[in-house]
Length: 323
Image 1 (cartoon, rainbow, N blue to C red):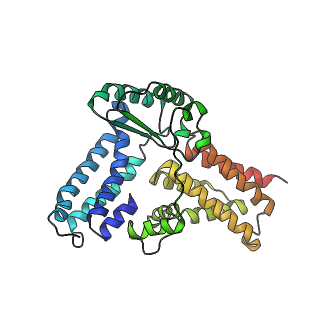
Image 2 (cartoon, rainbow, N blue to C red):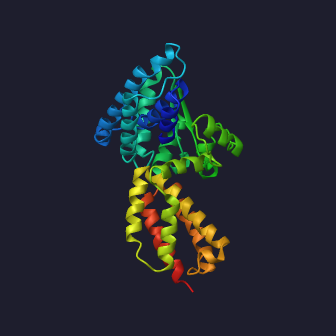
Image 3 (tube, rainbow, N blue to C red):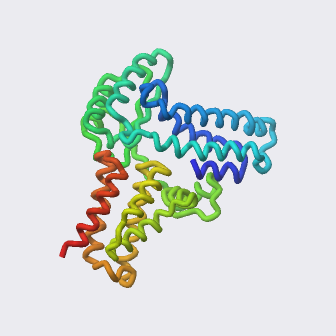
């Protein structure tokens, strides 16, 4: 969303406007009133309504300029800048309310009821991202739903780890492989879509850099953590900062950004013997697989990201104490 907002303010045109609107609505749709009980939406709904109001005003204020044939709008006025600022403020607040378990079992059961009751009202589409993270109860409920799919309902399950989806689920879906775009294509997306003058090698790098531009410097935090461990200093303050940073984006994405930065820092110190004089190379070699193991706890077991990162830091200390 941050990248979409920056692109829109830089170049006001239909494409960037729709990019911003779509990116925000992708988030607000996760809090659909048809799928969540009122108790779980109590805190989220006021923010969702505020975002929808801002998007509606944006559509009614800016997009008509393009419909009138003006092509690109001029530089953003105060009203447009205010709307984007409001969106940028509310989106992180809403992201913090995303359930840790992205698809709990009660949500799958609600999807079953919603899909059957609404099947007569035309085509319905349900998108489940990272389907391999479904826990046992939700996975079994989803399996039953796929065994008896309602009419006029299309289920799309996405995953970055196809092998982690149980065979009984895979056997009931049609698989499509979507490969990663070549790096030159990803850089072109950054340049043409997000209007980035200095595109990163990959879109993942680009989005992580966007969070860094908001003051969330993952590389610096990873470097400070390694330095603190090397000199046997307390890491409490670093962990508090890390929790705040993770919460500023989303727990899952924040943990991913940090672990990637930590992995890069360890790789750098392994390549430079003088970069880690206080840490034996054997310790750095022990740390690398710990990162992958603890990321698996988040990705596959759906454990709380902040708690997993704290446990990882403790595991790092333990690895340093080994002879």
